Each structure stands twice: as structure tokens, then as C-alpha cells.
Length: 353
Ligand SMILES: NC(=O)c1ccc[n+]([C@@H]2O[C@H](COP(=O)([O-])OP(=O)(O)OC[C@H]3O[C@@H](n4cnc5c(N)ncnc54)[C@H](O)[C@@H]3O)[C@@H](O)[C@H]2O)c1
Image 1 (cartoon, helix red, strand yellow):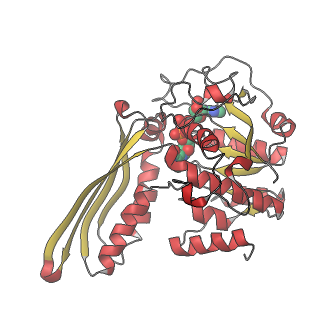
Image 2 (cartoon, rainbow, N blue to C red):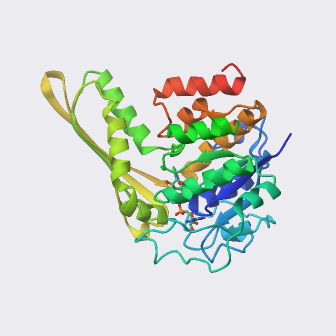
């Protein structure tokens, strides 16, 4: 089987879980033993076919080190999932741009090593797919890396909420360069927004009139701190709209608002409150908490996305690949019901789309 050559942009918590997961699942052969992964094989590809060939960061505890060490360097604080042997991939220094915000500047130690020529590293390493895992507020840096992918002839996966795949101008540029582009903002495997919408749909389908509902998050990773400063309002608007759309009538809805609690480490607690009226206006309420660890929540979807983008490359597809973007991202260029996105993705993998 061909290898899928990937470059990581940002060696934070999400990258750590991704790299550890590649090791963790490398020796699994049977779908039934493979707990926690949606697809052990996808389009014939196994996770062990994914090979990290380059990595970029700006923190001096990561730059210059082997990727196997850098993924465990602070301020990364996600779980240890697997022992990762030496990778022989050294983390390179990229340009800082807006990678560090006001709230994270005391947590991140910017390396003083010289920046590499990123496009040249991508070409030399044979990178096929650039996976963008920068902080959510790093919009300029995300765009800069999309430029590097274009000049090095690589596909681009935008796991961050920066608008790239959902921006018509970027979509056109990747189409003209005959390269695949997917995004934006990856959907978690155990996603609070998906759970919230599913609960609301189920209740309203059964005739319950929801009167008010909210979903609030608290988390302790660097990403939660960055979100608090730079993307909290955007996330709240996008998620509130998405949750409102799950109800066939108007209700008081707030979703996706969040706060930072340092001692939680990479854990995230999501609180759901739902109040409604059922038969003869008798009141009901749901008050629940979902507890997850953030970074491993991205692993299964990232494995699917990388393998699906490789399929797109093999088929010489170009521009935004809607079948992948709608399946695995919260803000694709076109929103659609989960069932439609799932079917489109399955058809795409089978080669029917
Ligand atoms: N479950 C998930 O973890 C999940 C789900 C959906 C989306 N995402 C998105 O993935 C992204 C990464 O999340 P995370 O938790 O790993 O964040 P993180 O803060 O742990 O990691 C970000 C990394 O980027 C590095 N960085 C900052 N500026 C840089 C630059 N200019 N060049 C290169 N590296 C730079 C930081 O040093 C850090 O290592 C975020 O945008 C997040 O919204 C994550």
C-alpha cells in the first residue's frame, strides 16, 4: 500500500494525540478489536499507511527536537496514549505571525532559531497533505501555511476554525492549482454540538416544545485559553446558529460559549441545559455534563480525513472536496443534515460520487 505523506503544522495537543494514535492503532488488523476508531480501513488504507514526513512549530521546547519528543513537551498536556519511538522527523521553526495571542504569550516560549523555508521543506520531504493544527486564533498563520501548500503542490486540511475551505477565494485558488482543500473546523468524535442537536431533534420530534437551552464548555488546554481571547464570540455565533437549526420553531438558544480552567489540563466539561413542555404543558428539564479529553476527540476524524484526501489526490480531484468537508467539519462551504453528509462521504469512498 502507498504511504500517505503528511506534514503537521502546529505540534500541540491535537498533533500529539494524532501521532500517538498512529502508533496505537498500527498493529490492529480486525475492525471488531479496534475500539475507538470509526474506520480501521478506509478506501483500503490502514492508519499505519499515514506517515508524518515534516512538522512545524514555534515553541523552543518543540523546535529542533524529534517529533516523538516534541509531542510530549509542555505546554502540551493531553493524555499519554502510546510510546512513540524516534520518528527521525525534526520539528522545524515556521514564522510566528499571529500564532500567539495575549492570553497564551506567557505559556508559549517562542524559539529564537531561524525560520526554515517551509515550501522547500514540504517539497524535499515529499509531503502530499498539509494538516493545519494551529491555534484557533491564528488566522493569518493558517492562511500563510495554505499559501505554502499551494506553492509546494500539496493538499490542505484545515482543522482550525479559520475560514479557508469555506472561503470562495481560497477554494478557487486550490481549484486552479489542481489541489484538494478540506475544512473548516474539525468535528469531534464525541461532539458536544452534535449531542446537543441530536437531543433537541429527538425531543421536538416527540412533540416536546423546547423553551430554552444552553450548552457551555470549560477546558484547560492552551487552545481553550486562546479561544477565550480570540474566537469565543465567533464560535458562540456559529454553534448557536447550528443548534437553532435543529429546532423547527424559535426557542431561546445559547451554544458554544466557553471558559478556561487551568487545572483541567486537556480535559473538557460540556454542560447541557434543556427546558421544555410536553403533554398538557407539563414541564421537563435535562441537566447533564459530558466529560472528554480534547485532543483524542479529534483522532478518529483526522484519520478518516487524511485517508479520504489521499483518495482525492489519487483521483486527481481539485478545489474543495465537499464530500469530505461536510462529513468531518463544522463549517464546510455548504451545511447539510448529518445523514446526507454521511451518505455523500460513503459514496465518495466507494467511488460512486
Ligand atoms: N478535539 C480537538 O482537539 C479539536 C477539534 C476541532 C478542531 N481543533 C482545532 O485544532 C487546532 C489545534 O488544537 P490544539 O488543541 O492542538 O492546540 P494547541 O494550542 O495545543 O496547539 C497549537 C500548536 O501550534 C503551535 N503554533 C502556534 N503558532 C504557530 C506558528 N505560527 N507556526 C507553527 N506552529 C505554531 C503552538 O506552539 C502549539 O504547539 C485548533 O485550531 C483547534 O480549534 C481541535
